[in-house]
Image 1: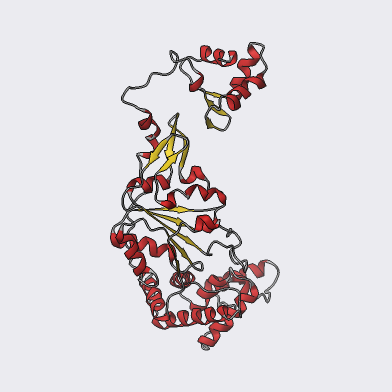
Image 2: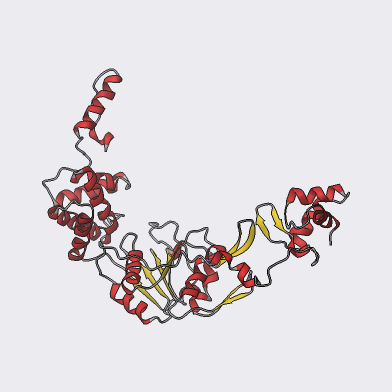
Length: 396
């Protein structure tokens, strides 16, 4: 054993976690090269990192000096301490605003079969892919786990990794392993946002046992386990640049999905039901406005598919407008606030199409001020030395 490490053990009997500073100081105290002691721990012995700059030196301790363990606490039980909490695995609640449509029937059949049948669902943002999977599980009372993919997602996030919990270094199983053990539906959301680090899921997508390399444990997927992934693209990147974070997924990885379902926007009749259910939820029922919103969204989408504009109004955006309408009690203001995220040309095109759907409503860019907003504006202008002529757009 390295003499610096031996000194640490003698100075701190029973302690196994030491910082880089402590390791280097121990070496310096006995006249050894501090850098050599640190290299010995980190690179030659590959001691586990507890937190940044802190290492677990248990493997370097003489057996006689190692902390005593309860014979009942086997390796498996100590590494699973953080995995006993399955709060990520649950049966989702039924949502009263949900309206079955699109691929919902197919999803029900897939989930109900309890077969391992990896499914890939692609479609534009905001058209109900994730919500549909959740509600299919709710209807069938099936447990599910949702994993949100980002460019930073790696094997530790998915399979699991070592964590410091209550002063102890334990292996915490990730959501993928938890779903496998529970026989749950693993929903991988926005899988096309990931990098090649998600390739660690190739074995999972084959329905085979998974070896957790960090612990040596082999996880057998329980009956009923399945993987359903959502994406805005089909794994070939975003050709028009709409989804700049979308990556090109390895073809061998995509081949492991049995089928691909394409999710389009709902029909006018179905979307009217969705909008009306949200109006009931927010206690702001307006059937005329519901029809106007859906007709407007349909006109925008047709123009989009004809390459007349670069953006669309999603079903989710319509629900946002309904919620905003329930707060401000003004149709035009609700629309104006909810299309503000788009560039000026797109906003103008949206407003033009809305005017064509309902010529009786002024362009939402000219938002009418409430009495309170008008008084506040007048007060601020007087403070500046007179009443100005700023437009209501400054207050939208």
